[in-house]
Image (tube, rainbow, N blue to C red; front, side, top):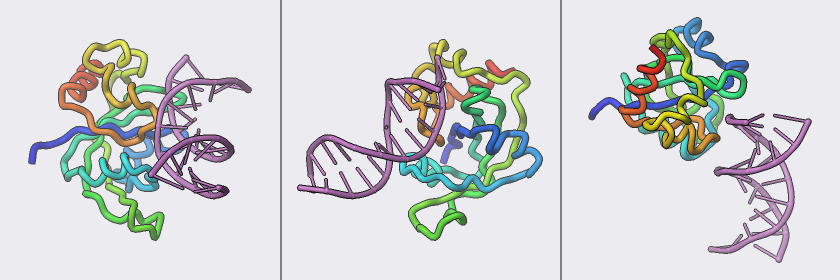
Length: 136
DNA sequence: GCCAACGTTGGC
DNA sequence: GCCAACGTTGGC
């Protein structure tokens, strides 16, 4: 199956891209939203992921990669929830602010802009590539 | 700090 | 099964 593209949101005070780089890889767990959970479950090893810092920074700051596909979330005994493992790939040379994405013709319809509360979302390849280009 | 959006819960 | 109340998230 073709590689897919995703965007993860995180509050940098809680867990940042820098934390991910230091940790090498991390379990992305604790997701308790069905839509986000369904997205986690659809991820495949090697899928590319953009990391967005919410609240204080409000910018896409880097790229990560799925290194382990969905497995039961270790932070709960509830079988409904899953986690994936991510590894950092690189930081964007230039973070791409939310305001810039809102103003961009290709990006203004992505879930990050449309549905601000969703924490794990799919991105069309064109949107992924556009953000990476803006961040270069 | 405020509040809009939205998901969840619980009474009926 | 509906919907009002409530809690949380995250932009402004």
